[in-house]
Image 1: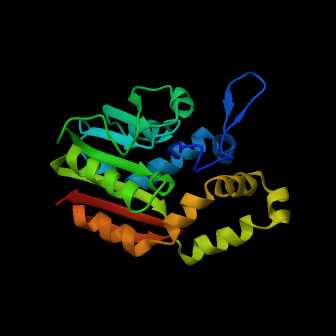
Image 2 (image 1 turned 30 degrees about the horizontal axis):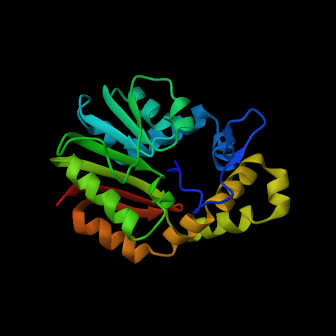
Length: 234
């Protein structure tokens, strides 16, 4: 999910629509990239892969960069009962209809007391942060502050594996974009987030160093264009 950025960072990310509201091409592409049901199923499989389904069902869980809330729906389907979400996009948060309490807030400044949450989950939000290392340091520091001592941080983010390089090559093809709405939506999202996306992919050592300074890895893997990380606060 994308954390909204300032207009000086993404000057083309917003435009006035015909009704006087704001229409964001990135969010439009994200919404058409996959159906809500497809995304919920994808998130549920990821969470099970990372062992989240083995946690206590009354764990206090927050999904950061929650977007339209399909990760929260996946968690609810797995039986979790204390769910919250945070995202800077009021438009995406407004699309959520479910049992979780959601907040329109900056994930670099989390609105929760110290050591108050059992699990924090990020599924595709850190690579939208505007500046490295500052924005990532602020986010990780906040996560560390909010998590209980025996809590868990769960992260799934893009990573420049051979598979992702192949995806980039396909999505840069005009023919592929014409033939597939999904590929075109992905290419559009990359176009509008290119600065932060490429910044993220080009600093793997820095990202891992900052993360491992604050969290000890319980699980970490790199596959299918993703970094999968489960850690506990140091």
